Image (cartoon, rainbow, N blue to C red):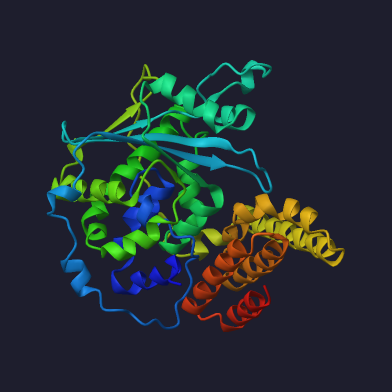
Length: 395
């Protein structure tokens, strides 16, 4: 079985800039995430066998009219802010990306999370859009977003906090500073409106700087990575046609054709504030922060306690209780929030082991283990890979 994680050799073959357009736009708000929303943490690859993909690149269908988007399409991206073990997350980032071939432009429509909505039984100070996801569910929140923007999304993408950190790390970006910038509203006079605009501008920068190289990746690689995204009502062919349309029409050279809109429309001007990754040249420039260290230690303690409880359920043959304990934190991929490579991989395996042992669906368990084994092969974590193989053989 070929795993999506085998494609991490792209870091060597094509470089980070090729992957960045897909990965960051998954996190930070666009359709291109469908190809490169990598969950694989950024680690030193000790060796890698790079396949020859020159022929595949040359055969990409960028000039094939049948593979280029022709009708307008709108995609809603929701950045979900769920705390550890919280199965009812808030909608922390809300962006609709409209790709419009007839108008030859892209419109990024952002909705500030703090916009008031009517939530029955919820006090007015807490009755805002971000909380609608938590209090009434994502379907309700989507209806409110449609009401506010008068835009009906053709597809919805949902990404969480851990995925964001994992992808930023893989791309070699300063994880915590980047995320802090994209979530920051308290530092700005315009608060939520400024933050939403900052996020949309970040997305626009990614499209302008990296679209062309990303489009040159072989189609088979895109197909595998596409499976990683959680999308509604979108197939690979449509997603690929959007990318081809972007390149064919040279959007990476035409910033004026990428418009940013905020709904509801503000009564004041919003400044253009770009993220400056150069402010964080080394990991030591931000990982020595005491708040960061405290967060890492607290997360480590939380995961250790979770594993301890899980082992007790397993030893008592309480599979249902074990599954209920781990289902949400496992789906949140909490290990991705750890910066230490060795610790992150170990927690990943330990949680995976208990989780697959709680599953009744053996096929799902086998797929999860196979993906982990191939990931460990890539990063040369032989011991953990061997343990996973032994577990797979016992299922």
